Length: 271
Image (tube, rainbow, N blue to C red; front, side):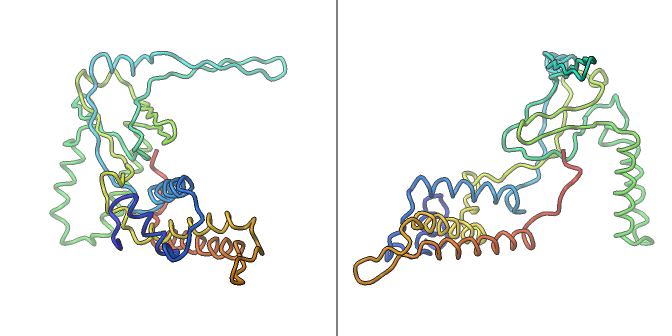
């Protein structure tokens, strides 16, 4: 099927591109499964269609807020240099985000206790008034100026400082939790991976199909390298090294294409 919509259809498509069933593809099914996982992971981490921007809402219950304010427990470590000994303590007051979240842009507190955290604050109203001057201003310069001033404002008078790592899935919010009332909400502006199980169009992505085909070709050549120079009936000589080298070159070109055409610019402000 030229337009695969499932994992198996994608595998069958790549095998046909390599010559199956005319040729026997000497790659084990488990090896192919590993390569599919690697290709999809690379697609999700680098391709702009592999992630999507979402807003997640989390309600802070009284018990939840108290845990975040005080921390359930602490991690204590000690170190010594010469005759000097120092002890360090780290709180465990973090929010555990779902595994599919790979980056956090910002956190909004939906609470009237802090003026700068309210989505309908003075800055928001001033921005609405600025809309009347669009006819007299260059839109690009206006947008760049507003973005720059907003970033400077967050750095000078930060409301929510966040720390997040996609491997641990722990989101730390360096704020005064006593400023947030019970049963209030936090809105997370974040990025999540596109799961092929919920978006089968991923299996039909043109770049992904080429990439997986080359990965299987490389594995095929690697499996045949040990038979280099073996002559089969009919005078055919196996040349796994050539298959392997050709696949490596193809993979380098495909990955370069991803960086040049499909990869998003580095987002240095994402936690």
